[in-house]
Image 1 (cartoon, rainbow, N blue to C red):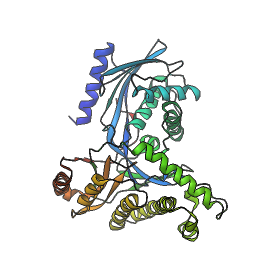
Image 2: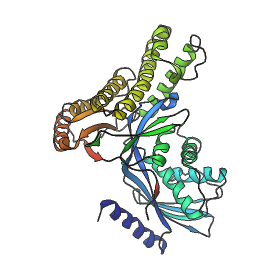
Image 3: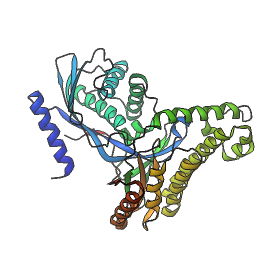
Image 4: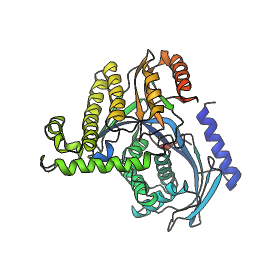
Length: 389
């Protein structure tokens, strides 16, 4: 039996033990890894995420009540709330992602009935692999299954983003929810965060995605994220005086920036350089993958890490050690930090024949520097959310 089938059986059995009946459905929504596009999403730019084979499972059934009861196997906690007027919970903050989706579905014309839910996640918490978006998307799909009503994929992603922004209070971009809904097995996604146009692109044949966890908590990620966002907005405010019509750094070309970057304060100039060049790197990465140029794709990953480290200044020693160890391995195409930075994970694209050596070298070199072993997780690009039973 496959590991995922064992997890699904466990969730179903938990549901039967807690609620005394079979669930009406089991749905899943995947986490994601950001392969390219560091901090470009809130600059209306381009990103390249991949849905991963780590997900949130929800077993669910409707009831005649006006409350929903959700049990989290990860937290061993139960949370009950009104489906008529969901309110934020201080006691079970994980449930706010569920509550927020129920709230937004009602505003979109889909009233969630009373529900019973068991939630189980294989997305590592706090590692930057977007367990929160996966929980939001899985909730939406569970409600779709029990009501027989649904919204199209893009609308579902936007609804889940609103739940996180407006109900939970986290000012996230659209990438995480979008890839969780619309990912395709074996492929990365190119997403334009302004227009929401997207396309799927193939990875180089015979490669795997390896996520390495630094085990360093991302304690600075939230506050520094807000600072970086403000610095990008400052860059746009100044550049607007010299480049008519721009609304975000996405609208600034490398040539425009080179002509006018002297008007920016030094730190703001560095931030703008990273975003403008990173947007271009995402476009180059799509071209490289579409033309089967795996070497160029790997080089772009490495360049993205260097820019994130030196210009956007969101790396840390632990992420640099992981990236340096990764690219020292023959068979690693490229490696970069993934997500907000200041801890969390790197993502590397590694040829299948080099996986054993990669894990050994990265583990040994990181342990020698950090004194602890990293998490090394070989993953596959997964499909988007849907019913699994």
